[in-house]
Image 1: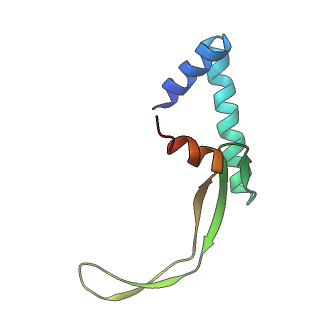
Image 2 (image 1 turned 90 degrees about the vertical axis):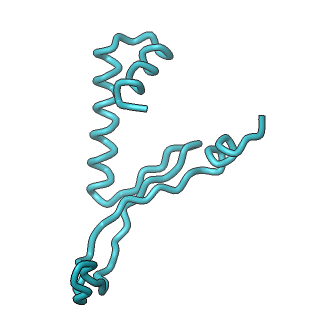
Length: 93
């Protein structure tokens, strides 16, 4: 599913114009990005929680030469689905 598909679903469900739906979607995504970039987590009831985690530097190897290298510390985005989402994904029909 693409951004355009999501916007189209918003149009269908709310009756908003495509331009209004696109603007709402863009504002939502920008707010999520800004919140996560500031280090806060985002919890959406019934869906899940997005959070930024710190990864420590670690030792690795260059796959071509086998030479040991140090991989820098970095931030990664993680998502933990809610129980409601887990149950809906595994629902038996």
